[in-house]
Image 1 (spheres, helix red, strand yellow):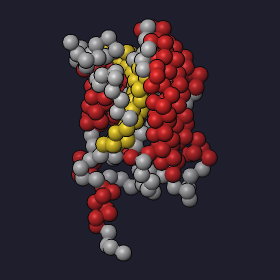
Image 2 (cartoon, one colour):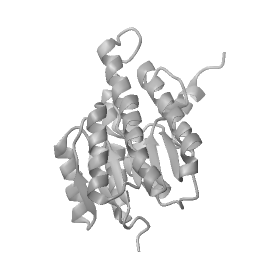
Image 3 (tube, one colour):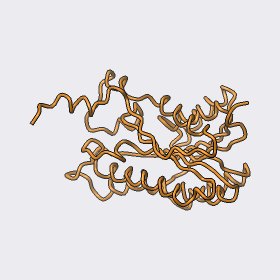
Image 4 (cartoon, one colour):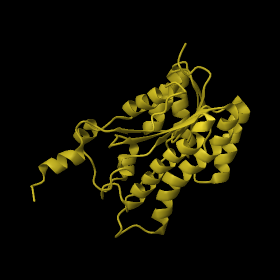
Length: 254
């Protein structure tokens, strides 16, 4: 028997990158995976990939920056399946005009709504059902930008991901007595479509040296398969060839 047989898992940002890889890995462990993102077409493709391998997937497109939409979808999942065991809170965005010289109010709203508000809305929406059923798990994709401050990711993305890290830890502080556990995953650079929102294009060699989505998906699968009595509060996962470390090594000493 697979480790997640009978479990209902909601994955946000499931249409590509880490979300897609996590959905495939979790379905491979027997979970029924609810796939959510803004666009239905990529979600349908991921669902087809899962079902072709004998897994179970349901597509529910939604705008996660709208609290009412998030609440309605969480309630629909519980009404349909009778429970909601795991939330993979993975949706995120970045923008090109990300530094203080260029960012405008629209960009700030995009970053905070897409990376922080959506994560808060999803966490808040699933907690009531998890309390009633006596347990549950939340796994949030933050970033190394949620721990390390640098110009690379931009101030808005960095601030939002720091807040996601804090959010996850506060869930454990309040909800551990309800059997609910929360893990925040902080990846370094991952070869995902969000890298197209980098001001400086990356070479194929650089992309190949980064973390790959499947490696992050396998980590999420591992976390989801841990016993309910175990919480890994926070994980840093980075490529061995870490571009920020390499750049530091190549700088001349002061």
